[in-house]
Structure formats: C-alpha cells, structure tokens
Image 1 (cartoon, rainbow, N blue to C red):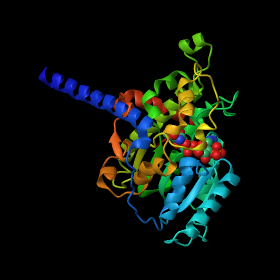
Image 2: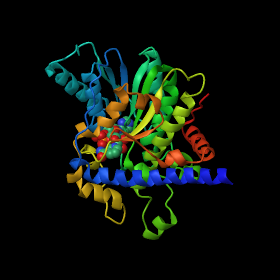
Image 3: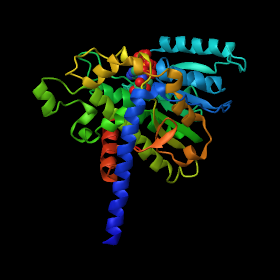
Image 4: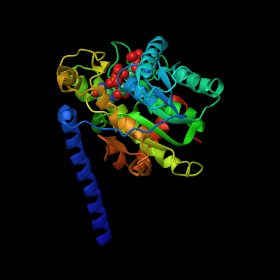
Length: 362
Ligand SMILES: NC(=O)c1ccc[n+]([C@@H]2O[C@H](COP(=O)([O-])OP(=O)(O)OC[C@H]3O[C@@H](n4cnc5c(N)ncnc54)[C@H](OP(=O)(O)O)[C@@H]3O)[C@@H](O)[C@H]2O)c1
C-alpha cells in the first residue's frame, strides 16, 4: 500500500513537471525575443562528418553553416538540388570571408538529393551513401526537413502516405534505419522538433495506415479537414518519441558502449521562410497557423533558433552525453508527453512506422 502511494506520488510529480514545462514552452514561444541570447561554446569539428536534411533554407541552412564554420564536412540533403547548390555556394563564400577560415575548396560542403516525403528517394539516398560515399561514418545527423502545411490537394504522397507525416517524420525514421550501420561511435542524431509536440497525438496512427489524415467528428461538424497544424504537431511528437525509443535501442547491445545519442529540440518561434510557405487559411480552419502567421513580429532570429540544436550536435558536456533520448528547449532538458507514454503503446506506434515505410529494425 505504502509502495503504491509512493509510486502514485512519483507519477504525479512527473505530470506536474510536464505541466510546468508546457507553460514555460508557451512563454518561450511567445516571448523568446525578450530572453537573453543563447551562447554555444565553440568546439572544433575538423574531420567530423555531418548530414543535415532540409539544409537549403532557414534553420537547416544556419545549422549547416555553423557546422561548416567549425570545420565539419557537411552534406546538405535537399529535395531541390539546385537550391542546395546555391546554399553550398553561400556557405563557401562565408567560409572564405571568415578570419579562421579552414580550407573550403576540397568539397567540404556538398549538396545531395533527398526528398524526405518519398521513401524511394530516402532509399536511393542511403544506397548512394553506401556506394558513392563508401558508407563514410556519420558523426552528426540532423533531421530538420519539415513543412507546416501542404498545397491544396496534396495531402497524400504518390506512395499513399500522409504528406506532412512522411516529410516531417517517416522519411527520417527510414533514413536512420538505413544509415544506422554508418552512424559513428559517439555520434549525435538531432531532430528539429517543436513546442507543437505538446499538442501532438501518436495514437491516431494506430487507426490510420500511412498516416493519411482522417477528420475527427469535430472537424466534420466544422466542415473542414484535419488542420495541418494538428498533423504537424503529431509529427513533432513522433520525432521526440523516436529520439527517446531510439536511445533505448542504442543503450542495449550491440550498440551499448558506442555512445551514440539521439535528441530532439525546440528551436523557438523562429523567423524563417516556413510561414511564408504555410497556406493562408481563415482562423476557424486552422487557428494555430493563423495566429503564428499573424504574429511573426514575435519570432526570434534564426541564429538564435539553431542554438540548442547546434549545442546538442557539438557539445561534449556530460549533461548531453548522459541524457540521450531527451527533449531540449533553450539548452535545458524538458519533459515531453512521449516520456510518459506507456511502453506498450510506443511499441505499437513503432510498428506502425515500420509498417508505413517498410523498414525492419533488426
Ligand atoms: N521556424 C520555426 O518557428 C520553427 C519552430 C519549430 C520547429 N521548426 C522546424 O524547423 C525545421 C526547419 O524549418 P524552417 O523553419 O527552417 O523552415 P524552412 O526554411 O522552410 O526550411 C524547411 C526545409 O525543409 C525542406 N524540405 C521541405 N520538404 C522537404 C522534403 N520533402 N524533402 C527534403 N527537404 C524538404 C525545405 O526545402 P524547400 O526550400 O525546397 O522547401 C527547407 O530546406 C522544420 O522541421 C520545422 O518544423 C521551425
């Protein structure tokens, strides 16, 4: 009886922490611009190999630039290679101007084709990594590619998957699976998640194969499809849940001892092109996206938005090395609903991800 009461007390404390972290997260999202700037200690990355998805723009571009400035070899994985090449040029110009510029001429920054919403493109990318790059060990893998909404009539991909689900999450699940043999000891896998994860729902996937959106009764009454902001939030919770379950896998044999760690982070409300790509919808169709588009003045600069992700990818601090599988906001560990989920449910969700992309994790 006493033991049961102690356990209940422990669970109540976790929910209390989650509640407080949600409040903090809302505050940071709305008033991030008023908070002191984050500073990421410089750590040289010479000889390290990084892949960043969705790297031609916004947060992915800034992360690639910061990694390259520290001396890493960076592969920009972009759906549109010519936009990727333009980003490579811009990074190289920046490196040439830099006072501590390390040689950028040896193809240290390169663009590669990857469309995360297409599982065949993900497979082709992984095959090219094995063949052309000889399965080069990857020290930093940043899953950053993402969309907030889909153009009208493009909710489902040619492969029959929910477009937001495939782009923001499933492609990275499959990519991690296929690249796992190349992930180096001590590597960091980082997901650009979002505070939206607090509003995410994982279990809807159990009844919707392929993550194809199904409007709820409430949506039907309002005469609308499932809001894109809800589908987005679901994928951000998936990223956090995946980081946590991936870490559990890596804590076991044969990975234990390789010190590979996975982390999800929240960049804040960041000034990037993402909201100019978000559909203009009336407030009753998608109130969350409507509000974020209307209050862009509250967003923070991209250099600040990447700080936590850059820190997770590069730091040697014990706090990060010890707490793989965590969710971070402003370089601080926070609770996620994923951390309180029943392991049996998480396992079933994992099986849905495997089902949807055809991956098998040995
Ligand atoms: N901005 C924020 O306030 C905020 C807040 C929380 C989380 N995030 C997350 O941060 C990440 C980056 O977003 P951002 O704000 O930097 O916006 P962004 O500038 O629009 O960057 C998104 C990147 O993802 C790429 N992308 C989209 N679909 C892709 C696909 N199917 N395959 C490969 N790449 C694809 C985009 O390529 P194109 O240029 O070709 O479109 C672009 O390079 C996203 O995951 C987003 O959810 C952003």
